[in-house]
Length: 98
Image (tube, rainbow, N blue to C red; front, side):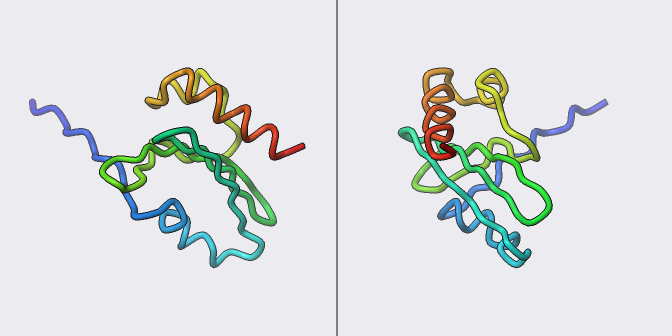
């Protein structure tokens, strides 16, 4: 039995390029905060919202995870964001929402 190979992350020249297909939806918006080579994106449209986490590698932004709902620090760490970065990203996002 062969083990399945891990799928490499989707990497893009910009975070906006990752969300480009979604921009066609009515009312779709993103909010981006960064901390060194990590980014947290809040996205929402008329009916839903969520967050995405990215890591910059070789001048490209690679998606670590993107889903509905908001992340906690432990979840970001589980997807590869070092805890200090995860905590700073969440704090920055929280400040923007005030």
